[in-house]
Length: 200
Image 1 (tube, rainbow, N blue to C red):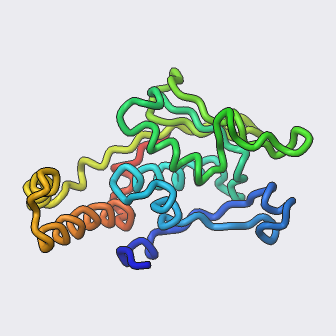
Image 2: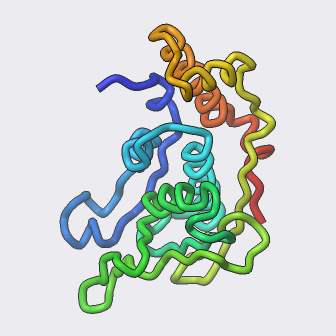
């Protein structure tokens, strides 16, 4: 399996998963979520998936400053509807990381360690997404805006050719490289995170 090398350079998200611990999937329930795993879940790597990953990373750091985040114990609320823009893509990625599901999710063992009903859309919040700890009720709202990290000027004309299905093999490769180049700048440019990610 070949993929851009920067995927492996992205900071992983360390969590503790009580359900995985209970069922013996991971020792002590300790695990790491990586950007590569989120790309597999989403089916692609783009600024939206990258932003969702960073929102989860920074949001969990805020909620659990002195301990491992508890996977399956974080509620995900979205300001917009599931079908609005890229809201569903963002929520799917964040929910995958924090172990949250909608009505069809795992219903727990005798009511414990359930994952269902932890996702809500059309919530009256100020920012794009809100993460809330189930145990303490502490929450953080998060916005993401990657506009300060502009794509290459060569990308738009190449995308036009791609959409019209007239791009050469060389142009297809060039487009993919330029697309992922921007994603890499978003994920590896930690000095920009405080600009593109806003928490409150």
